[in-house]
Length: 425
Image (cartoon, rainbow, N blue to C red; front, side, top):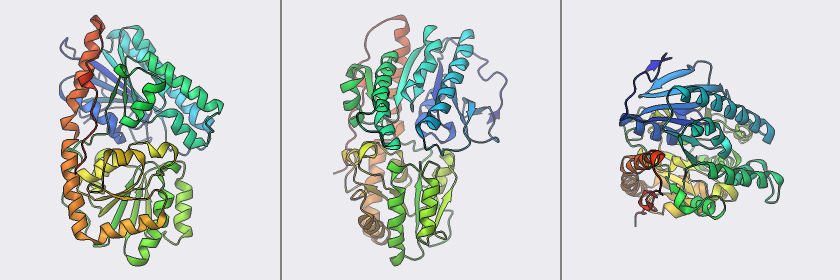
């Protein structure tokens, strides 16, 4: 790893592509962005990422596994609770990213700019590059109108929701291609914002070079439950903490470790203290992708307690396949999206929002060795089929097709759009 390179991409070749990924996130923790960037760099493309900086200790520019990461804006916390406080830093990031792309594309045009939401309208940062001939991909990690309606309790008829749906349509029209994170959103998105032939689905395929079974570092025999991710209302961590309080009555040595930041963190800590769980429910700062893989590998159980109302019902959780790839059984809320992709032979479902049912599910998986072995075995087969290694060529072909169209025309072949993953029987 080389920090602060003066000229991060000082060699060029007509055979390689120059590609930029723009994300209002921390690159080192963003599984989806890392997969794309490293797949491109691995084959020899020149890849740069415009992202956020998590702490003052992080360098402004850093090369990570042949990907040059430019941290153009600081974000030393994720505690926004009002729409305006959330929006203003995003608008600033849009302007800073646009200025960066405008400057950097003068000497050599980016062949492709891959913009990751949230928000959709971040694609406007790539307009200067598009003027010079770059192809634009818009990647929908989270479908924005529903996400914001859930986050800020906006009604379906609010001006906020109307404006976000308008921004979604305009952003989609600016993109040369749109990627969505699951098939449910594909149906919704193409019904209101973009034609189906312009869209592809790439679920959050797990990178098995990072998330792989490994020897345990933990020596304690106490059961350990882990949750890594955002701490927003739709994630349902309050449900998990209340269920853990019930579980502890049967398994008093059990521990629950939560890694992440978000608008609910303060309330969740207060809830754990109120329930007398401050010694066994521990909160930790977010970790990089590779660090969290090492930590989760030491767990006995993963939990994904999303609410099945609104946004959480259709938001695909990357954590599920990461747990499975590490050989950790996982208890999952029975949401529409998770029932679409998984079944009872792969994960242990519980009724969404039901504290008692979640407590029963956690106890069952922690104490029934036959069930644990079956879940781990079937999940391992599933992630093998749905690994990034088996799917990344679809993305590389998509990039190559879009770049080739800079000198031609025509639509992408339908084969590049993902089929639904096959569940285990």
